[in-house]
Image (cartoon, rainbow, N blue to C red; front, side):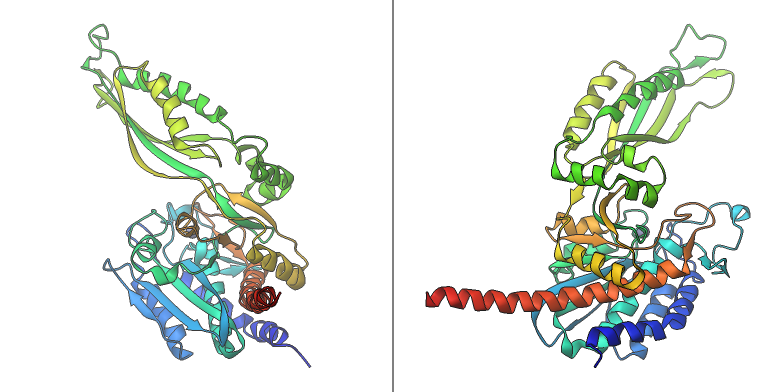
Length: 432
Ligand SMILES: [Zn+2]
């Protein structure tokens, strides 16, 4: 006799074509952020749930940026698992650089091409199907399952998961699973921090031939930028369990994020993302502004970085800085039952053994970690993410969808058994 879990996997395999066509339809609805309008894409998700008789609620604090919450209670006691995916995507950039149109969802070379293919319409589709399949067998499950499909993720905006976590506490649960891109070989249990700073340099300015009358703020900015590079020397302490885990999994980090990623995972990085200054060639400018994107590793408080930064800027009296935005680095336990469930099922489905690592960039999972909820990310490879020719390999997408479903099943079921055993043990203690 086949088990409920075996039947679940069989049903998912039978729905592969349906999953692929849903993903293609979702990619074909443009949702670039900015402006971040996801109304039509959300209608497709809502229609999917309605067709299966699954109730949901739309929460739209900002017009054009709807969020969806769906949930069900299983047949018994158990934990509350939350699945989270976003619908907005990066803008496509220069269309002429794409081999296939970013909104065409062309299938070629065993891949689906398009903006959002990996970040993260495939992950969101995987979680949506996981939710629907588990809903269909809910009477066999312990605990409860929540699905959150959100907007406003790509700009770290306030109207998506940030709004839900703040205003709808029922989406917190006991554990979060996200399908943001990681690669099938990696499970993310944390992410680096983010510190965005704007630096402005001001001088009187002058005629371009009268350089003795004013310092040049662009030159000052250039010197300052060269000095700021030394912030990259700030690293995580070498002897923490997380640093050791990351060192052990260096090959996976390089595989997931590209060669060299394991070198920067435990160090601060600095990117000068934008600079502007000057009006025309024959004027000494009076201002130059640039923005720096600093990413901080685990166990490096932002205050330490700021102290070094202030010390450097003091030497440039024409310069002033302003913190634009920041998020602290964050982690969850890398040996959590959800991590074990993902590893076990990935192995069973595709003979892949993913390793726990942290992310270079940030995603909505951090919001749950800040609220004290363990949060994990497992998705396809980030090929073309944030640039042209974004794609998802079809086998990776299907692998992720199946792994999400079975890991969620195991998490809900195993914890249910744990709790029964726990109650039994407590009772035994009382008798002694
Ligand atoms: Zn994303």
